[in-house]
Length: 419
Image (cartoon, rainbow, N blue to C red; front, top):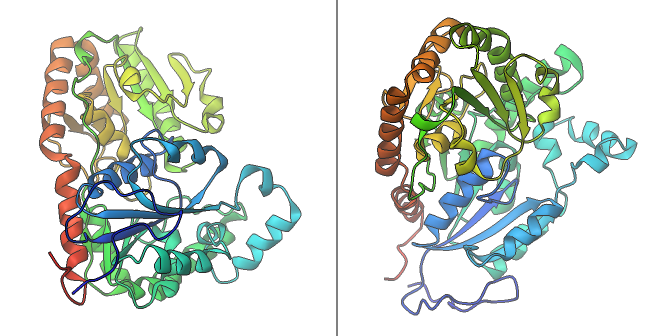
């Protein structure tokens, strides 16, 4: 029988929320960033949505790498964390040009792929030991490939590793040329084979990634489905101008790659059909696509925190991708707001929304034709938007995903929690 106390053990634990029944499952989330519903990247939004749903069924703690802008967000009234400990991220812009930092990264790169090296924090093992002693989690959820290197410091406790990109994140360009990139890919394969088997349970966020990862590490891999907060009122794409949107964090290599293709190969076809057609490019780190801003019909917005307001000004999300794994948070976010999506098969991974909510087309001509159909017909856009919103309400509920996660975690325990 579980006899641990239900009161906070130190200042790291938030005050009790009034729960006075038997102790609930305690889940510690280990993340390379702070989950945040207002984040400039899809992973932060996804994990924040999932954590909020998990907090309705379990006690949730957080250990994460953080940046200075994260602190105010962790003090909000809706924070789900009963326990939280943060470590400053060492790979930040003000450090990257310093010789000492570059030499440290090259030293770590001897044995770690570069993205994992950038997420190695020498103080993390001690912080995890502290979290184990203070929060006493039943299970640790380890998020994303780069955090798998900390699994050896979680021995003796059940762990769930969720890989978001099938063992090799898309941002694997080292800046050291083709030879460096090939070496980094080999390091990723070795890294996955070395660390992933140490997790009690492996998950990915798409069935395709699960199949790939299963072949790499030789063990069963589960799938954790996407979730997103669906607003109470959808946008109205039928009333928006003839305008398409591409959205993403342009630090993530597949996004500037896709944006360039859209501007170069798809937008001219849209404007040939409708000279007033525009392509808006929104998202953080837009300096990486600044060169696209002067193309006719392109508007570069940068990071827009108000997604509902942004989606309300466009007719559709045009979101194909040419590389990368995982699911596409941009498409899930658009569908949740009632905005139809035009994408390709790679851009559609992890999302099962049917037509007309989501249209899948391959190649610039087919993508343009699908977009033109919505740009030319407000009624078609309106109908597709209604289908998108209904699908989102039926499929993106966080509580369903959280229930599955709690059930999987409970199966890993040596004995059920007392109820």
